[in-house]
Length: 152
Length: 116
Image (cartoon, rainbow over all chains, first blue to last red; front, side, top):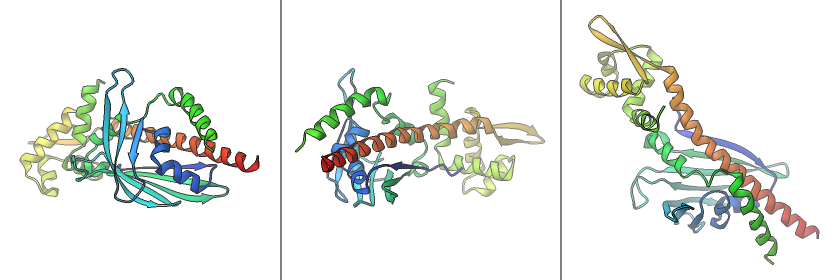
């Protein structure tokens, strides 16, 4: 039962350069994952992912550390550290990008579940998303594209 | 099954020694505290405690044969635990769909800019 790794592939109709920006820049990461992301996209840089509870206004901050930045091929970071100073076992998320036709193949791997115990998987699921996915996301994306187009 | 029971299930399976014990019971078939302790760097007493935890959450069940209890894996319950890890994978599916959507939207807007 080697279940310590999650691996996913997805094809994207966008160039590796664009996909790399989306997975590795905090301003883009906010559109697909936490409510806020703060980090410099530089190997070794510390950072934070932030979730806001819409009802209570409380925020949850999770430490992150950028591991590898190799545009437009690979971006990886660690999160869910077991120690407060970004040390000890952590989950490692890696995005590997490969050109595929006019688009890009993304391979996402998240490892460390086995080393950290499977409880962490439950913890990870807690930081899922704003769920329920599209209800929240579609209005957001509309505003996002509008801002993007408005940018000179 | 309640969330509390699920938490127990997860912490039962979260321990590396207990995962190794499940691996051994799956690969070698039913075993006893004695037979498992021979394969593991822990005492028979420690193995017995781990077996009790696994038994309590239903990941293994025991039959008494002769002087010792023989344990085997409850594959249905193990499948439930594995399914929960798959649920974590599903959260990544959702994130990746959004990555795709955002990247494709940017790509189209840039093409549009170049074309226009």
